[in-house]
Amino acid sequence: MSDDVRVIANAAYDALIQGFQTGAWESFFDLFDDEVDVILPAPQTGHFTGTEGREKLVGFFSVFAPGASRFDKVEVISQTVAEDRVVFEDWARGVFFNEPYAARHCIHIMVRNGKVVGFHEYNRPLD
Image 1 (tube, rainbow, N blue to C red):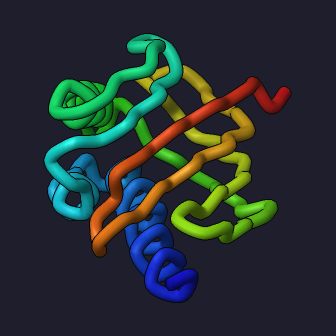
Image 2 (tube, rainbow, N blue to C red):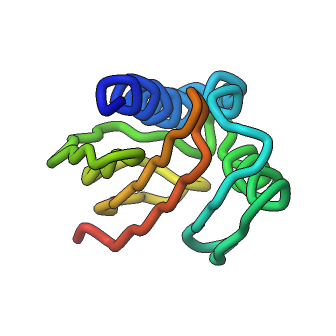
C-alpha cells in the first residue's frame, strides 16, 4: 500500500508545484476525491472537510494565476511515508501576488482508494 500512496502523493505534490509554475491546476485537482479533509494557510486559513473541503481547496489554489505568482526555486528537505499519508517538507522562493515570497512548508497528503482525500499545508517565512 505504501508504494501506491507514495506514487499518488508524489503526483499530487508535483502537480502542486507545476500549478504554481503554470497556473494550470486541473491536473492537481483531478487527483482529489469528491470529499477532502483540508487545512489551508492564509488567506483562507481553516480546516474544512467533505465537499466543502474540496471546494475550498479549488478556490484557494485557483487564485494563483500565471504572471502574478510562481515558485522560482523549490527544494524538498524530506519526505516521509506512513500508512495512508506522505509528509513533504520543503522550502520555496518566488513571487506571490507580485511580492517576493520565501517560506518553508510542511504538506501532508492523505491517499485512500487511489485518490487524495486529505491535504494539510503549514508554512512559515523562510527569511
